[in-house]
Image (cartoon, rainbow, N blue to C red; front, side, top):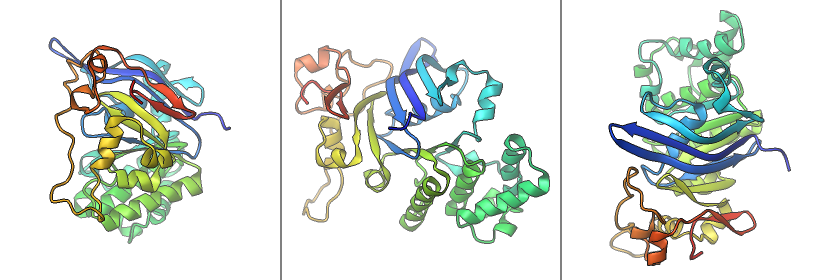
Length: 321
C-alpha cells in the first residue's frame, strides 16, 4: 500500500470566547492516501469545516487555535512550519475550494488577475505565461468564453461559473491534495453533477487526492472511497463507502441514512433525528449522541467512548456496535 499523503492525529481545535472553551474539533484522526477521495459527512456544526481550516492553518484569529495533535503532510508536521513555509504549501501542494465562492473570491479584482496571482506566487511564471495557463485551466473546467471571462469580475458570473473559477484556481498548481468544502451547495442539480465530474477528472488527470466535505449523502455515494462521519467535533464512524451504506454500525450514521428520502417509501413525513447537537462548550462526559440515540443507556452518557476498530478497516465510536 502507498504511504499516506496526509495523516491527522488527535487534532483538537478550540475556540475561546470570554470564559467559554468551545471544542469545535476534539480528537480527530484522518488519513488520506494519494488519489483517494475521502468524504467527511455530518450535519451543520459537527466540525467538518473547522477540520479543513485547521489542516490549511486558516483558522479565524484570535479566537480559533489548534491546541493539540499533529497534521502531517508528506512526512512534515504542518503545525511546526512557519507562516512563510505554510504559505508556500497553500495553493501549491494543498489547495482548498471554499464553501461560498462569492465571498471567497475578490469582488474588485478581475478573475484573470486572481488566477495569475497564484502562478506568479508559486510557479514564478511571467505574466504572459500565467495568463495563458489561467485560460487553459478555465477551459479544463469547462468555462465558456475563457479568454473573455479572465477580464470580468465575480459579480458578472453565475453561481456555477464562480464555482468553476474556484476549482480552476485550486487546480492551477496541480496540488497533491484538494480540500473541497461543500463545493455543490446552492448549485442546481445539473451544475452539481458537472462539478462532481470535474473533481473526478482532476483525480484522473492530476493524481490529486481529495477531501470532500458535505452533508449530502448522495454526493458521498457518488464520490467517496472512504467516509468519515462526524458528530459534535468527533469522528463517530470511519469506513469505506460501500460498507457505510450497506452495514453502518453507529446509531448516528444509521439515523442519517434513514433521513434520505426514498421513492419506494410512501411516507407522509420524512424521518428526522430528534433533539439537537450538544453545545460545544458543555459536551457531556460520555457519548455525545446519547441524548438523541434510541439505543443509549446510562453507561453511554457517563463513560468516555473511544473510536474502536470493530472490523478490519471499520472504526466506530459506540459501545453497542
